Image (cartoon, rainbow, N blue to C red; front, side):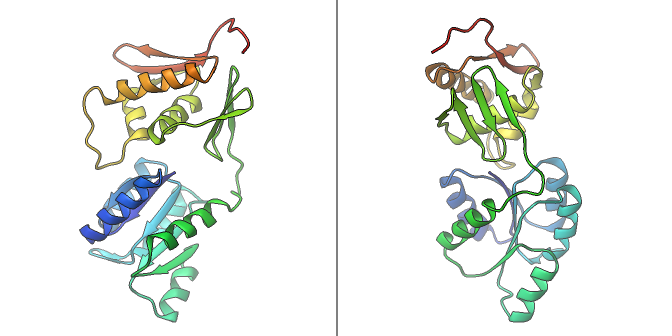
Length: 229
């Protein structure tokens, strides 16, 4: 799950990002409405966590902008504005949930899980490459019907490759899919993740291969004439 967290308090933002990372989520940070708007337009997110009291205005104004980009994007407001009027206003402005500060991270995680269980209005596709199946809605990988467990970055990398399987995916596209805005990226980090993903797929019996296209990126395709398991 890729989350856009809009929070201007550095300590709060760092604590939330760390907690969400530890639970397998990728978090992009924005400290104001302007940067959040850029983030919404440059990347696809699965959830918007939104503070209302931001340096350049009321964060609630972002809800309409977010839905213009992604009509089904879930929104949870995280704010100290906790009066009944504030909560009603936030929900009326389009938020799916409203959590008043201070809150326990366990409650936030529970609310994220609850929103994730809601059926999407648009069914997400399933990619089948050889005996590998990637379910984009559930973000799960199966080989011959058995679930294959991947680490978070491996899963994000495979998702980006599977969505465009049979086509070359540029390195820049893969890096955007795997890393958050604030992540420090070493020059060979992407290649290391690809190498680990190759090994996991091979050990899992997947009939797919990841080819390097020198100077451009990588390509995922079915292994020709693969032997059955």
